[in-house]
Image 1: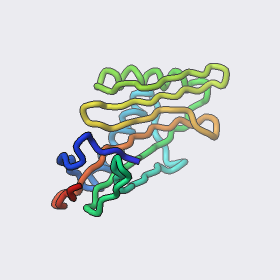
Image 2: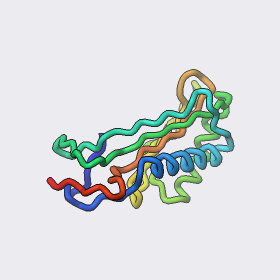
Image 3: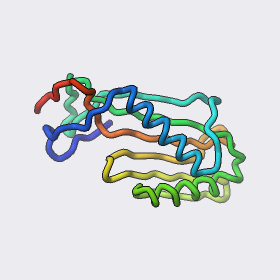
Image 4: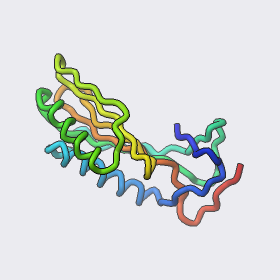
Length: 153
């Protein structure tokens, strides 16, 4: 679920679904690169476009959307913590605020959540199941398609 800014009628950033997907693909590929791994097609990348939902649960009809996109990398489980540490360092250098970070050496696995305050997107780098799988995911802010008229509330 996405939340609008303080002013529900503040102009939204504009981006087409294709451009949002291309950006998400580039960003998750960069995250994998920072980790020193390569995203694979097994499992396949996951993309989820959703309608934006406002603070008071309003759902506009103007075509605005968010995108959550994830890629996966096959990485031996004993390298997960090291890989996510590398991602953390690189993201912090690129303006991402780490909002939560946990290492679980007994498993071993790592979980990182971050947010880019300026561009208003969130991200995840974490160990997922089955073992030996890392996920790199980004979630965009609410975008209005080019040419669409923004609905007012």
